[in-house]
Structure formats: structure tokens, C-alpha cells
Amino acid sequence: GGSSEGIFLYVGVLKMGKSKKKNGVSHARSDWVYAQINHLTSSFSVTFDPTNGTVSVNEADPASVRVVRSYERASGKDKFVISTPSNSLEAPLSVSQALQSQFNVFIAIDTSKKVIDGRAMCATVAYGVETYANNEVIRPLCGFLIFDVDANVNPEKIGWHLALKVVNAKYFQSNKKLGVVVDSALEEHQEINSRKIGYYEEHYLPDFASLIYASDGSADDLPNQMIRLCDAQAAKVLTQLTPDAIKQFVLEQGDKNFAGYARLRFRTDAPNSLYR
Image (cartoon, rainbow, N blue to C red):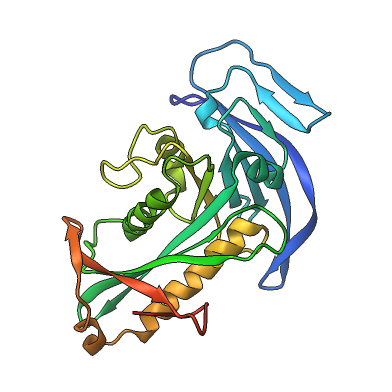
């Protein structure tokens, strides 16, 4: 359909072999290729290559091309399960194929928020994997406790920034292609991935990284499983916090959006638990 911002194309559909249940209701998944044409045109061409299962929209903005898995809600609106950029005019009609072809390292970052003794406290947890494969071990990467977060700021982005500083140090000047799995600000992903805007304030994604959206309400694929684990562990951190415990932390300096942060360590005797 057309709009003042361009033409949005929803190309092709591949029915998945299974569906998931939520509250006892089964939702059939579909994989789609989304693309956007940013100029007026009287025609456009869509090409499907059956040899590799890819779709091309030659007139589209390459930054707009993404592969999406979704299902239809009871309201008739689509619920996105995964959205991953293609970074080219050609995209496979399969989320799993798109993830495997685009990235060789994945990290997931999630942040939970809770007001404790009048203070807006957030916990960020990041996990990573070194490859896209079945039964891949999801390993802890880093965690942060963030203090006094401004109510007008998306705390997820603060968490992205703190975690990506760790990732930058690990993967900078390597041949890694990093997929950063998050569950927030999907409407901004295209501009963040094309470096038109920063992912947090004036901080831009490193050249080797792209944001991937994954819902934590599903376990469809590796990104969903990763973000679910991060969400659960971040929430667990906040349940352990008390007003007295907060006073024990020595903070590193924050910025205009938060007072400061402390690093969290993963317990070696229980890898899925965190402590200071």
C-alpha cells in the first residue's frame, strides 16, 4: 500500500511446519519478506529464485528489506515473532535461512525495571552464542545493575549501550557478523541498522552488527530462546534486590539518563543465576 513515506511491500509467504500455542490457542506462523520503495514509480518487479528460495524487489531500499516471522492475532493484526534485516535487495523466504546467512555470532540483551525504595532500578543481562545451530549452548556474556533511570528514557537502550561496549572490546576488528537480539524499539530498527540514527543517544552500531527483533513470548527460534533467557534472568536479579542491598554497590559513572551502574557477575556454581 502507498503512503507519504513510501510503498511498503509484503512479499511471499511460507507456512511453517508447526504452530505454537498461547493460552491454549494455536497460532500458525508465516515467514514474509518486507521491503519498501521510497520513490514514486508506476511499476516494480518482484523476482523469486526457486534454486535458493530468495525474493528480490529491485526498486526497494536495501535498508528496508527484512525477513519477518509473524502470526495473526485475534484482532486481525500481525504479531511479529522475529524480524531480521537482509542488508541487500535479495532475501530468503525463511527467517532461519536469513539468520544463518547474515550472522555468525548472536548476542541477546534484555532489561527489566523495578522501583525499589523510590528508585528506578534496572537490570540488564546479555547472553551470546558463537554460531547458529540446533541445541547451541547459550552462554552468559555480561550483566549490569542500572541506578536511577530517567522515566522519559527507554531503559532497554541503556542496557544495549552497556552490553555493546563489552562486545565491541571482544569483536572489534574481527571478521564476525554480529546479530544483536532485542525486544524493543522495532519501529526504529531500520534507521538504527542503516546508521541514520544512534541506537542510544549519539552512539551508533559498530559496522559488524545489526539489530534483530525477537519476541520473548515465543520459543520459535534461537533469538527467541535467547531473549527469553535474558528476560528471565534480568527479572530474577531485581527480585533479589532490597533497599539495603542497593546501598552496598559501588557505582561507575552514568550519564544524563541514569546515575550510574554496577557490573554483575555470573555464578560459576549456577550459570543461570547472577550475583554481584
